[in-house]
Image (cartoon, rainbow, N blue to C red; front, side):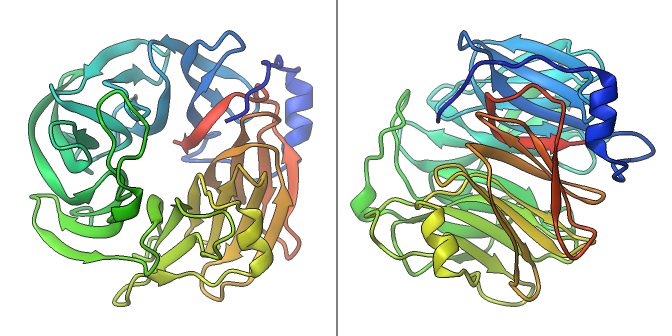
Length: 364
């Protein structure tokens, strides 16, 4: 992914004007944006910023991270190592203090995603079994004080698991099995001719509830978003020919099959066979997606599939919902706010550091 040099923060007055009076409160205060990013020298950081541009912390870490998982009750978050990392970082979100460098088990590496259970005592992380490359497992960790301890693992019932999320019941896991085998210390795909991508629903005790596949064998299910009513959406990365006409967005509504989300040909082509992050705004019933290879941000009506926004944003990365719409980060330019409260979606730049943001962000 393309990266550019850090740009410094501007003043608080500019930050306030950029917010333009939008409703950005979260539990009575501005949300804290958590993400991984690099600096111009290639050093890796776990960062937390308020949306007015004020830095809460920027903690240097050893390896590049991917997603961030906030604890449901405590001021801590796990910055999960990017495949094939063997380290993740538990950070105090008040001041950036590094609480723990979490190491993967022998013959395991992280796939970039994890979730805390709603009670806060348990964490589940997607991992690769490198003794049987690509065999998906969930590492099961227990939080004891300020340390995560690995206690067991579960099968993901598939190959190459990537993101996982909870359904609204808080006990059912959704797992995106990308279907790709990779060896330890490698991102090289071993099995593109025999990919087995799938969307799995499983209980957190490991029991399989359902396993569904898209018709295109090389359409790798990667990233997920879940609405408050249980509607779930996945973004794909297509591993076949660039000229193949394959939809890269899929949906599973409660009680229905996993199937393609209706896409216009123009939007499908602009994605360039790759999607990065997806997010759902449950109140506004909107779906947002970033496609960094195509430098595009898309927003649809979740129920009607009406396209609400198709706009350029260079190397767009993470996306997350706020009260009035979505925040989107960028690997090359400014992070932006998209106001979706009116018929016409408008956007405004945020006074956050520009560029070098990784593929995901979390707002807590």
